[in-house]
Image (tube, rainbow, N blue to C red; front, side):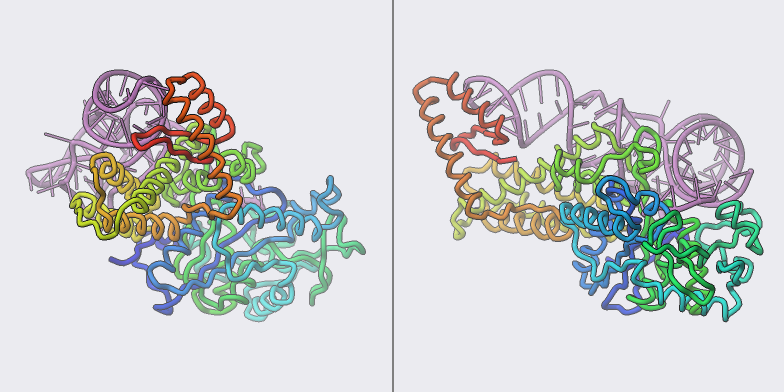
Length: 482
RNA sequence: GCCAAGGUGGCAGAGUCCGGCCGAACGCAGCGGCCUGCAGAGCCGCCUACCGCCGGUUCAAAUCCGGCCCUUGGCUCCA
C-alpha cells in the first residue's frame, strides 16, 4: 500500500515517489503577515501538518520549510495603525508573533525553517540577474519583468494560455511591459529614510532602489533552503494562478530543472456560499475559534473534510465537529480507564474488539495513503470508539490486550498522526483539581445515598457551570473537565 | 469570456481515479427502545438517499462517455 497524491500539475492522482526514497523536501506557501490568521489559513496549516506527520509516520525524513511574506503592500497599508508598528518591518514582526502564537495553539509540528522575504533579498536579486542573463527577463524603467513568451511551458500548472490571459498588475506598469501577462520580478521604488512611507521598504539593486516582485520570494527562499527541485509544494487553491504558475516559470527558467515534483492544493473554506477571506470580512479568527471551542475541536473541524475538497464553515458545521471530537476523546478516555482497571494477566478475549483494532489501523492507513483522506481516517478511529464502547458496556471483565492495543492505536493514529492532544499533561495542579472534584463528588454521593437528590442535582449543575461534566455510572460518578 | 473544481439523505460529508463488497461510510440534528432515581454518556433501531437533469455504453454505473442546467474558486493582494 503506497501513498497516492493528487498532483495539480497533471490533474491526476499519482504514486508518491520523492527524489530521495528516504526523505521529502516540503515547501508550504505561508502567510502574508498583514493581519490575524483566520480559519481558512488554519485549514491549510492543519492539513499540511497532517501530511508532514503522515510522511514521517510512514518513514520519511521530512524537511519542511514554510515562509512568511513580510514585504507586501498590504503590510505597508497598516503601518501606523494602533499598536501594530510604524514601519513595514515592525508591522510584519507584530503579525509574525501573533501568527506563531496561533500556530502553537493548534499543536502544529514546527517547520525546519520559517524564512522571511526581507532576509532573502540578496538571493532574490541573484535570481533576477540570472533570469536577465538567460534572456527570460528584462529591465524596464528600473523594474524587471519576466517575459512569459520566453518560457514555453508558461501556463502548464493552471492550464492557461498566454494569449487568452488578461493583463497582470496595475495599469501604471502595463506600459512598461512587453506582454500584458508579464509579471514583475523587481519593482522600482523610492527609498524612504524610515523604511515606511507609501512605497514600503526598499533595497538597493543593480536596477536601482526597489522591492522584490510578488512571486519571486518563494522561488528564492525554497531554492535557498531546499534546493532546486522540491518534492512537494503545498499552498491554497487560490494561489494556483498566478502565484504558483509564476513560481514555476521563474524557477525552471533559472535552473533548467523541474521546480516541484508534486503540487498539492488545499481547497478553500467557504462560509455563506463564498470563500472565507480577510478582504470579504467574513472570517473567524483562529484565536477566537480556539478559545471558544478548543484546539482539538477546531482541528477536528478542519480535518473532517478532505484537504482537496471545499469545506463549509457555519456555526452548525463547527459544533458538529465539537461533538465528533468529544466522541473521540470520550472513547479514548474510556479505553484508558478500562485498561487501568484490569489485571494485565486476565485471559479474557473479545474477538470483535481485537478485529476492530486491526480494522481501524488498516482503514486508517488506507485512507491516509489515498491522498491524505483525513475524513475517512477519522471515521476509522470513530468506529474503534464504537467497538470500545460496546466492549466496555457489554463485558463484566475486559480484554486487557485488546484494550491496550486500542489505546495505542488512538495515541499513535489520533495523537501522533492527526495531531490531537489526547492525553492532558497531568501536572501537579491538574491532579489537585481532580482530587477536589472527587471530593465534591463524594459529598454528592452521600446526598444521593440519603435520597437527597435535589441537593445532588444542584451539585452536578454547579459543577457543570464550572466546566466539569459529571456522568453517573454503575460504578459511581465520573467526570471530565472541559 | 477563458481556466479549474463541484452538484450525494434535514445538515454535513466520504465514496467517483481502478464500474459489481454502495440496498451508499463516519458524524450532527430529530424520533423510538435499552440502561438509569433523574440527566448525561453509551448501546440498538428509525428518519435515510431513485447519488443535479437528459441520453448512451455495460450482464452491472453515484462511479465510464456525450449534452444541458446550476454553484464556487482563479484570471487583482489572498491559505
